[in-house]
Each structure stands twice: as C-alpha cells, then as structure tokens.
Image (tube, rainbow, N blue to C red):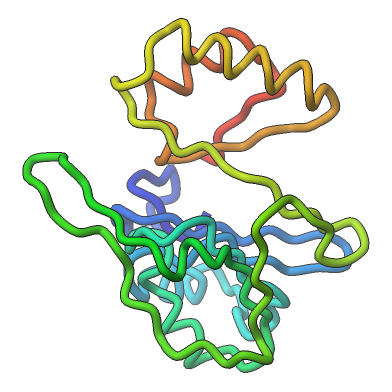
Length: 187
C-alpha cells in the first residue's frame, strides 16, 4: 500500500487517494497513483524503485486514483498505462460536503504506452484486468450488498478479492459477512 487514507505503517504518509504496488514473479503493477506524488515519497521510504514497474492500472478517472499519474510518468519511462476509454473522457462529481468535481486532470499519455480496455481481458500471461469495488458507503442497502457478495462468491469462487477506501467500512463489513475469507482489505 503506497497511498491510502489509512496506514498501519508509521513511516508512511496518508492522503485521500489510493496506490497499491502488486508484485508477482513476472510483473510489477501499480494499481492507481493516488491524488499526488505521495505514493512516490512513500515508495522511497520503503526502498521501492518505481522505475521497475511494468504496468500502471488506473481503475477509474477520479482525481484520488489518477492524480499522481503525471508524477509517475516523470520517473518511469517504460510502464504501460492500462485504462478504460471511459475514464479518460468521463466527468465525475462528488456530493460529499458540497458538489465538486473529482475528475482527474490527465497528463499527456504517449500512445505507444497506452492499453485502452473496456472489458475484462488478459494483458499478459497470468495478468488479468477485472472491475473494482466503488461503493458509496451508506448508499447501498443491506439487501444490495448481500446480493453483490452472493453474486461475486458464486461467479468467482476461486478469486481472492481485496478492497480499500472506495468500498467504505460499512459496505466492507456487510460484504465480508457474506464472502468470508474470500474478501480482504489491504490494511
């Protein structure tokens, strides 16, 4: 976890944003870039070289998930950027506290580094891209969360799901009651 609103590591700073480094035997994937360059500073504190990242997956066009992309592009010249065309063109607003834009300002994205996707697909051997949890904590009913948890558990029985700040505490607890050990959080 390189950026989130919470951390259990006293070395790391927090922000309302998300950035997670996922490492496999073959790939280094950065899931989102947070709202600023904080994920880079936290990576430095952890001794992580972001120049070694192969892919950046931007989950959606909110500023707290893609706002740090321009900073990433300054330090990494090779990673492919995986994003939905809808994220690049959408406009997003939040009603929390007051109506305001949460649309990211996209940096120049070199065409040769872009992987535009609009559905689940295999990017490389063993690397699949699926949707995420973006729930409005307090907006979904218990019945809606129960139905979602049941559907995920039945359709993807072998999948381990991980979630973070976009799910919200109440929604996470309700989904966890249905999905059990199949649902985890990064914190």
